[in-house]
Length: 212
Ligand code: AMP
Image (cartoon, rainbow, N blue to C red; front, side, top):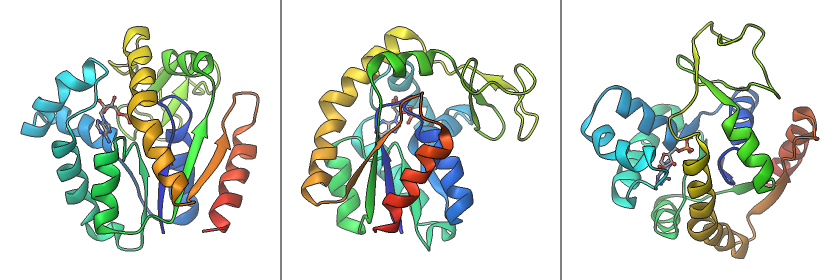
């Protein structure tokens, strides 16, 4: 099963990705996470990607596609995977479709105000990547991950200017990708508004996946 988790940043994809991984026992591949790992390890890819990411721009397609292809060739992807944050451009979608068949696209939606509020308050575990929010999903102990005890941090690109730029980029570059998959009748729209509980959204996700 190959499922794409799409939607603007801050809509909750990371939260559901973790839950889906546990439920379906296949990995979630996040291109953003792989880039951050490369930056941390100061690899050649990381050095190129850093300036794009810190400024809220997309990393060029060629670099992103090569990095993703290398990752999904690994053994743990044999039975399928969830993709979080890829494809973000039509060129990336075409590169993916050239090699494999996408079964479903989950399009997570929320309004811009909600997204900005979510991203500004987002905290991420340095060790395991779990996502928290200072107001909506606070950890039991401030600054510490409930799951692994790792330190929580605020991402460099989670400040207002970069957030607004990313939202704009999403509309210009990634909405056409969702239309591309709508034409293939693969898209399920998942309303991810904050008033909805995580369990309720997860229920809708599972329902959508039953129809793949
Ligand atoms: P994310 O964690 O998905 O929000 O990604 C963080 C940043 O990594 C994005 O703002 C982009 O700069 C870069 N990035 C992640 N995935 C992609 C992609 N598929 N194409 C281009 N850039 C990406």
